[in-house]
Image 1: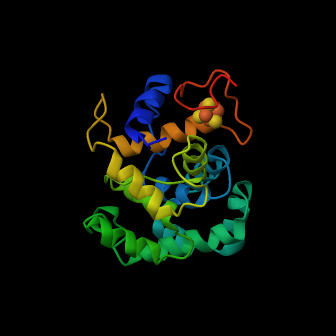
Image 2 (image 1 turned 120 degrees about the horizontal axis):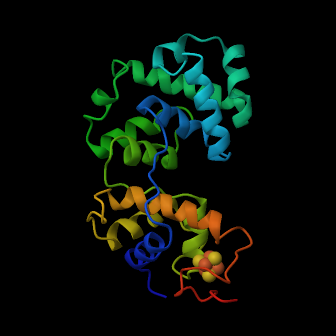
Length: 220
Ligand code: SF4
Protein backbone atom coordinates (compact mmCIF):
# COMPACT_ATOMS: atom_id res chain seq x y z
CA UNK A 1 0.00 0.00 0.00
CA UNK A 2 1.30 3.45 -0.90
CA UNK A 3 2.19 5.37 2.26
CA UNK A 4 -0.27 8.16 2.97
CA UNK A 5 0.72 9.80 6.28
CA UNK A 6 -1.59 12.74 5.58
CA UNK A 7 -4.61 10.43 5.44
CA UNK A 8 -3.45 8.62 8.59
CA UNK A 9 -3.13 11.95 10.38
CA UNK A 10 -6.68 12.92 9.44
CA UNK A 11 -8.08 9.59 10.63
CA UNK A 12 -6.21 9.67 13.95
CA UNK A 13 -7.06 13.31 14.56
CA UNK A 14 -10.71 12.57 13.80
CA UNK A 15 -10.68 9.62 16.22
CA UNK A 16 -8.73 11.09 19.13
CA UNK A 17 -8.73 14.86 18.72
CA UNK A 18 -5.95 17.19 19.90
CA UNK A 19 -3.44 15.63 22.31
CA UNK A 20 -1.99 18.84 23.81
CA UNK A 21 1.63 17.75 23.80
CA UNK A 22 4.18 18.18 25.30
CA UNK A 23 2.54 17.84 28.72
CA UNK A 24 5.13 19.85 30.71
CA UNK A 25 4.98 23.04 32.75
CA UNK A 26 8.26 24.56 31.59
CA UNK A 27 10.94 24.11 28.95
CA UNK A 28 13.29 22.63 31.56
CA UNK A 29 10.58 20.14 32.58
CA UNK A 30 10.03 19.25 28.94
CA UNK A 31 13.72 18.67 28.16
CA UNK A 32 14.40 16.73 31.36
CA UNK A 33 11.22 14.76 30.65
CA UNK A 34 12.60 13.75 27.26
CA UNK A 35 15.46 11.96 29.03
CA UNK A 36 13.31 10.55 31.83
CA UNK A 37 10.74 9.03 29.46
CA UNK A 38 13.37 6.91 27.71
CA UNK A 39 12.37 3.26 28.19
CA UNK A 40 9.60 4.09 30.61
CA UNK A 41 6.01 5.30 30.67
CA UNK A 42 5.32 9.04 30.71
CA UNK A 43 3.35 8.67 33.98
CA UNK A 44 6.55 7.56 35.74
CA UNK A 45 8.66 10.23 34.07
CA UNK A 46 6.09 12.89 35.00
CA UNK A 47 6.22 11.86 38.68
CA UNK A 48 9.96 12.42 38.68
CA UNK A 49 9.64 15.78 36.94
CA UNK A 50 7.15 16.85 39.63
CA UNK A 51 9.44 15.60 42.35
CA UNK A 52 12.41 17.55 40.92
CA UNK A 53 10.20 20.62 40.71
CA UNK A 54 8.97 20.20 44.30
CA UNK A 55 12.59 20.00 45.45
CA UNK A 56 13.58 23.14 43.51
CA UNK A 57 15.84 21.07 41.29
CA UNK A 58 14.35 21.85 37.91
CA UNK A 59 16.87 24.46 36.85
CA UNK A 60 20.02 23.70 34.87
CA UNK A 61 22.20 25.14 37.64
CA UNK A 62 20.52 23.03 40.33
CA UNK A 63 20.85 19.92 38.16
CA UNK A 64 24.56 20.56 37.68
CA UNK A 65 25.10 21.18 41.39
CA UNK A 66 23.11 18.37 42.94
CA UNK A 67 25.04 15.35 44.23
CA UNK A 68 24.57 12.04 42.44
CA UNK A 69 23.09 10.11 45.36
CA UNK A 70 20.26 12.61 45.90
CA UNK A 71 19.49 12.77 42.21
CA UNK A 72 19.47 8.96 41.96
CA UNK A 73 16.93 8.84 44.76
CA UNK A 74 14.56 11.22 42.96
CA UNK A 75 15.08 9.58 39.57
CA UNK A 76 14.53 6.01 40.79
CA UNK A 77 10.77 5.83 39.84
CA UNK A 78 11.67 6.46 36.17
CA UNK A 79 14.07 3.47 36.05
CA UNK A 80 17.69 3.35 34.85
CA UNK A 81 18.25 6.13 37.36
CA UNK A 82 22.06 6.13 37.26
CA UNK A 83 22.13 6.33 33.47
CA UNK A 84 19.40 8.98 33.38
CA UNK A 85 21.16 10.96 36.10
CA UNK A 86 24.33 11.06 33.95
CA UNK A 87 22.31 12.08 30.92
CA UNK A 88 20.39 14.83 32.69
CA UNK A 89 23.62 16.22 34.12
CA UNK A 90 25.17 16.11 30.64
CA UNK A 91 22.18 18.05 29.30
CA UNK A 92 22.50 20.59 32.13
CA UNK A 93 26.22 21.06 31.34
CA UNK A 94 25.35 21.42 27.66
CA UNK A 95 22.86 24.16 28.54
CA UNK A 96 25.59 26.03 30.42
CA UNK A 97 27.21 26.74 27.05
CA UNK A 98 23.98 28.52 26.06
CA UNK A 99 23.82 30.59 29.27
CA UNK A 100 21.15 28.15 30.56
CA UNK A 101 18.79 29.75 28.08
CA UNK A 102 16.60 27.73 25.74
CA UNK A 103 15.91 30.97 23.91
CA UNK A 104 19.61 31.18 23.10
CA UNK A 105 19.79 27.48 22.23
CA UNK A 106 16.80 27.77 19.93
CA UNK A 107 18.39 30.54 17.90
CA UNK A 108 20.31 27.72 16.18
CA UNK A 109 19.05 26.69 12.78
CA UNK A 110 17.27 23.29 12.89
CA UNK A 111 20.04 21.10 11.41
CA UNK A 112 22.67 22.73 13.61
CA UNK A 113 20.43 22.46 16.68
CA UNK A 114 19.96 18.75 15.99
CA UNK A 115 23.70 18.19 15.53
CA UNK A 116 24.48 19.99 18.78
CA UNK A 117 21.85 18.07 20.73
CA UNK A 118 23.07 14.76 19.33
CA UNK A 119 26.49 15.44 20.85
CA UNK A 120 24.99 15.31 24.36
CA UNK A 121 25.41 11.98 26.12
CA UNK A 122 22.10 10.10 25.99
CA UNK A 123 20.39 12.34 23.47
CA UNK A 124 19.65 10.20 20.43
CA UNK A 125 17.64 11.13 17.36
CA UNK A 126 14.24 10.58 18.97
CA UNK A 127 15.16 12.70 22.01
CA UNK A 128 16.78 15.43 19.92
CA UNK A 129 13.81 15.62 17.58
CA UNK A 130 11.40 15.70 20.54
CA UNK A 131 13.21 18.76 21.88
CA UNK A 132 13.26 20.36 18.43
CA UNK A 133 9.59 19.63 17.72
CA UNK A 134 8.01 20.22 21.13
CA UNK A 135 10.55 22.65 22.57
CA UNK A 136 11.70 24.74 19.62
CA UNK A 137 8.39 24.29 17.77
CA UNK A 138 9.99 23.33 14.46
CA UNK A 139 8.54 21.22 11.65
CA UNK A 140 10.23 17.97 12.65
CA UNK A 141 8.53 14.60 12.98
CA UNK A 142 9.54 12.41 15.92
CA UNK A 143 9.95 8.73 15.03
CA UNK A 144 9.51 6.14 17.76
CA UNK A 145 8.81 2.43 18.22
CA UNK A 146 5.07 3.04 17.85
CA UNK A 147 5.54 4.79 14.50
CA UNK A 148 7.67 1.98 13.16
CA UNK A 149 5.19 -0.64 14.36
CA UNK A 150 2.15 1.15 12.92
CA UNK A 151 3.73 1.96 9.57
CA UNK A 152 4.93 -1.64 9.27
CA UNK A 153 1.45 -2.98 10.03
CA UNK A 154 -0.02 -0.65 7.42
CA UNK A 155 2.36 -2.23 4.90
CA UNK A 156 4.12 1.08 4.28
CA UNK A 157 7.63 0.18 5.41
CA UNK A 158 9.85 -2.71 6.37
CA UNK A 159 10.13 -2.98 10.15
CA UNK A 160 13.91 -2.55 9.91
CA UNK A 161 13.61 0.86 8.25
CA UNK A 162 16.09 3.38 9.63
CA UNK A 163 15.11 6.41 11.69
CA UNK A 164 16.06 9.01 9.10
CA UNK A 165 14.39 7.13 6.25
CA UNK A 166 11.11 6.83 8.13
CA UNK A 167 11.26 10.47 9.16
CA UNK A 168 11.91 11.47 5.55
CA UNK A 169 8.90 9.44 4.42
CA UNK A 170 6.66 11.50 6.71
CA UNK A 171 8.38 14.82 5.96
CA UNK A 172 8.02 14.33 2.23
CA UNK A 173 4.45 13.03 2.26
CA UNK A 174 2.68 15.32 4.63
CA UNK A 175 1.56 18.85 3.98
CA UNK A 176 3.36 21.25 6.27
CA UNK A 177 0.11 22.94 7.01
CA UNK A 178 -1.50 23.68 10.29
CA UNK A 179 -4.26 21.44 11.46
CA UNK A 180 -7.55 22.94 12.64
CA UNK A 181 -6.77 24.80 15.85
CA UNK A 182 -3.36 25.97 14.72
CA UNK A 183 -0.99 23.45 16.31
CA UNK A 184 1.74 22.26 14.01
CA UNK A 185 0.96 18.98 12.32
CA UNK A 186 4.15 17.07 13.21
CA UNK A 187 3.67 17.93 16.87
CA UNK A 188 0.16 16.51 16.79
CA UNK A 189 0.91 13.55 14.52
CA UNK A 190 3.49 11.98 16.82
CA UNK A 191 1.23 12.46 19.85
CA UNK A 192 -1.67 10.86 17.97
CA UNK A 193 0.42 7.84 16.99
CA UNK A 194 1.38 7.34 20.65
CA UNK A 195 -2.29 7.64 21.63
CA UNK A 196 -3.28 5.14 18.93
CA UNK A 197 -0.63 2.68 20.13
CA UNK A 198 -2.09 2.88 23.62
CA UNK A 199 -5.73 2.60 22.52
CA UNK A 200 -5.58 0.01 19.74
CA UNK A 201 -2.24 -0.69 18.08
CA UNK A 202 -0.61 -2.44 21.04
CA UNK A 203 2.07 -5.09 20.75
CA UNK A 204 -0.91 -7.42 20.37
CA UNK A 205 -3.23 -5.11 18.46
CA UNK A 206 -6.95 -4.71 19.17
CA UNK A 207 -8.00 -4.35 15.55
CA UNK A 208 -11.71 -4.87 16.05
CA UNK A 209 -12.74 -1.29 16.63
CA UNK A 210 -9.67 0.39 15.19
CA UNK A 211 -10.46 3.70 13.49
CA UNK A 212 -7.80 3.17 10.80
CA UNK A 213 -10.23 1.54 8.41
CA UNK A 214 -7.74 1.37 5.55
CA UNK A 215 -5.51 -0.96 7.58
CA UNK A 216 -5.92 -4.47 6.23
CA UNK A 217 -6.19 -5.87 9.74
CA UNK A 218 -9.18 -3.75 10.76
CA UNK A 219 -12.19 -5.81 11.82
CA UNK A 220 -10.06 -8.91 12.39
S1 SF4 B 1 -6.19 -2.42 12.40
FE1 SF4 B 1 -4.90 -3.27 14.04
S2 SF4 B 1 -2.80 -3.33 13.21
FE2 SF4 B 1 -4.04 -1.94 11.91
S3 SF4 B 1 -3.69 0.09 12.79
FE3 SF4 B 1 -5.53 -0.72 13.74
S4 SF4 B 1 -4.85 -1.72 15.63
FE4 SF4 B 1 -3.04 -1.39 14.33
